[in-house]
Image: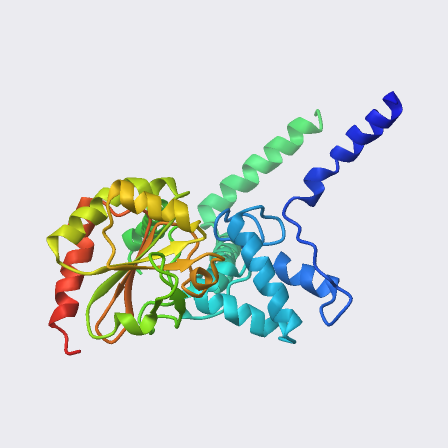
Length: 157
Length: 180
């Protein structure tokens, strides 16, 4: 009897795994993989850092049902996505579309990269030029004198 | 390029970036802009909360400026908003329609009896399907609809007296002046 009780307790531990998961029939048109992939890339609007697949919010549940039923009607992934975007905006997408208001988001990092490269190139070239600068005859003579002096000391003579 | 420009350039870039990021701090990520603004109100036809035999549909909004308020008895901030709606309804400035969202009919009716009924009529959206069509993601939400039945504004969250005075009423006045 205690064993049975323990087994029952262990089964209870599995309950959280069921949370936020509806029982859908995936034997028909809608493949489970396709469904899971789709709800994994849609954002829940209530808890915004979770996908529809992860979220336990009431709205996420409703939207999962909505997604499943649309797929059941034979709609493509894009049609389901368009349905949700028409109601909730681009916000439901984890991957925002490329359009004027998101240019900064998509291209900003590359602009910064190019700017950085330009600054780097300018610096390298300037340094190269400085290295080639000639000293006046006077300065050159002093340098030579100092260097020979130093060499002599190092040779210990 | 004069020397001082070269030294000021990084500072200017830094300031531009700081301004951009600072602005981002004051944007509430929970306020998702609705794609429905400027579009005709999504079609629906639902039983009225008050009387299942009568329906309320988007056609009822046409010919007048109106508000659609999404509410539920389980929504705590709707309770806070209710007094504001009551006062707005008593002022007679604009008719308020209600979308009773994912609620239970007896509880909702009791709520209106107990706290007062600011609504001209309520649509009873038991399963939340119409709510999804309207892009509802957090009650309460309030839509401003113009005479042609086009959604012109959406306010997410509980209305306050201040928001009604500054945001809702001026827009209602403006929409009333428009040709129908």
